[in-house]
Length: 232
Image 1 (cartoon, rainbow, N blue to C red):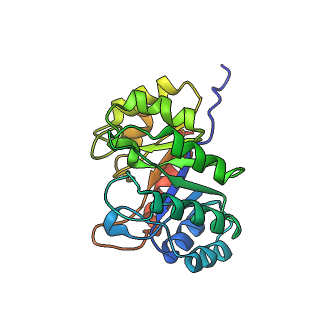
Image 2: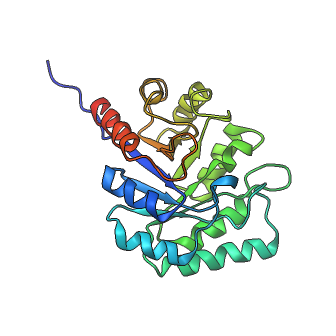
């Protein structure tokens, strides 16, 4: 019997400080989402932190562009700040950006997102979990695709990826390969096998933070990567 061919399964680690990024690179992660502000779910990191991480890892570093915590409806001044941050960070050698903008009706703002994606060109962009705040996920999916993003980070419109696993599977089916759907939100080694089996996703996102810790756990990252390798 011919062996069935499987594509590699990938791991992105959300890192809220330089130390976590170094750990992620050492432990076998495929990509880093670099940010700061763990208490608000992630903000744009300081340029000096970005520089430090880029000198310490060899895997791709995507940087979050988010000027503040709270909602994802931004003022003109905040929007300009996001553009300026992309301009600066492109010069440092990052490999991509992570952001998401909604309008006041909690719909994906196609105009502003498209402009930022073009501003980031030729670097790829991921739409972060602002997606889970959008009022209608299947409409939001089409809007994010239309805006030019390469990836959507989502928990399937639930508080975590396990609860949203069936919706994640549906989003992947609806995407039909037009965009990567990356499960995130509470992804840990103990639930990763279920997520792999249920969603069929190729990329998974985790902070690998153990309870009460502020830096990624190296053994957890290795466990996540081992599970992905064994299920590929």
